[in-house]
Image 1 (cartoon, helix red, strand yellow):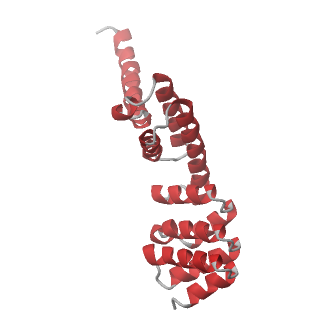
Image 2: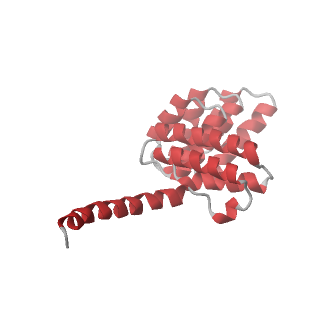
Image 3: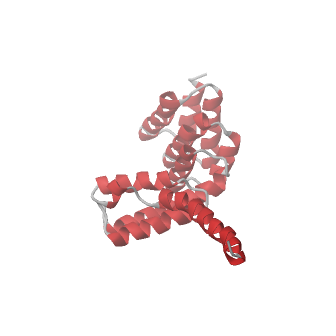
Length: 203
């Protein structure tokens, strides 16, 4: 074999390896065929671009695909779908920066939803640092957002949720705290007093 052919082999090998390395990332970013059937080529290309950009920031592609499926099931199409997914991707990227590189996908979703509901970013970051266990943080962030929405100041809401978590409340029992606080507030009680009363009665 001539010398130029021997020299060409490493080049061909590098090209093949490069293609093999990039293909999985492209496949992850590409919407599944069942999703593409519900979208135009333009929307498919735009969503692929949004997904690839979010993936580079550490956001799992499946979180965005899930949101696409949700939008399609509600009849959202075209530019409206693109705008909704782009906004959601931005929130997930921001959540990744707040939660850190190792945060699980469900924690990212909970942080993004809490931010959308008005929980301040520094409060989300502090809460996640205090509650690295996703069994505490995922529902805890939802309850934190509920309490702030009910009128409890952010700092008091975070302390109340942490106190409830420390007493072993998880899942539905923890959600019951915010529901009870809302009922008390609707009857005219002060939001902070209502939260303290509900946490105290669960000692």
